[in-house]
Image (cartoon, rainbow, N blue to C red; front, side, top):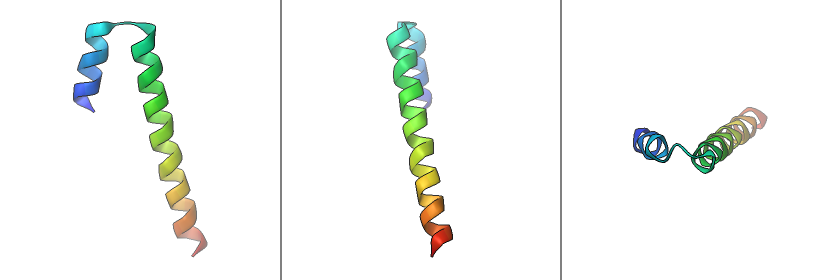
Length: 41
């Protein structure tokens, strides 16, 4: 994760930030899905 941050800081482009946002949202979405599955059982 830190490596990703460094890469995007070096680029400092909107594309880099879009990638980070996408990555984080996908990560949290999967975490929420896992939690929901665990709670249901």
